[in-house]
Amino acid sequence: MGQGEHPRRAREQARDGELSAAVARAQAGDEVAFAVAYRMVQPGLLGYLRGLVGDEAEDVAAEAWLEIARDLGRFRGDGAGFRGWTAAIARHRALDLLRRQKARPRPSALERDVLDLPAAQNTAEQAFETLSTERALALLAALPRDQREAVLLRVVVGLDGPAAARILGKRPGAVRTAAYRGLKRLARQLGVERPGDARSAGDAGGVGGAGDGVTDDGPRTLGESP
Image (cartoon, rainbow, N blue to C red):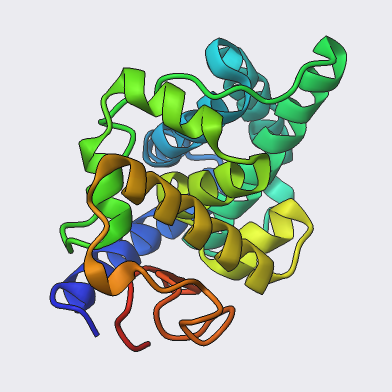
């Protein structure tokens, strides 16, 4: 376990607990609680949408939140589940837009305050902390779509592997591999990859093996044991 891993996970669990409580109150009709849930989820959701539809992200997010508010009573789950549910709704709205435009997903600037990453210094964090908005546009555009979406869902939205896999309709191992490869590519381009990170996913023991860089619990230091 990397240094700082336990505090980071504790912070994530605390945020999810707060979100879960806010969602429960919102389902009971508390409008203030809904606003709390919105403020907790919207930054990551908007960052994810910017990676898919660029400048149309805010409009798509607004459409998604209308659907979220309408169907809130149907949601069942905790805070982490709510983030996954909202991301799935937002993705559907984004894909609808892209189909209408007959355009491929195009990333745009990812604002640094959207990327509220934990303090532990792993490759994912170093890569995103080094990005300026201009470089984010260029580097994320260069990633294959599966890697770009996996990175956005895992790092920006903060979903675990199974939740991201459900949204993308893929196996968790495939999502972990895509996120790993995307983060490795970003790290190489930014010059933050460490010598111990040079192994491929296959050399590191396959999908989900030691060294894959992202686990079902979230990003970890590349090369450390689960």
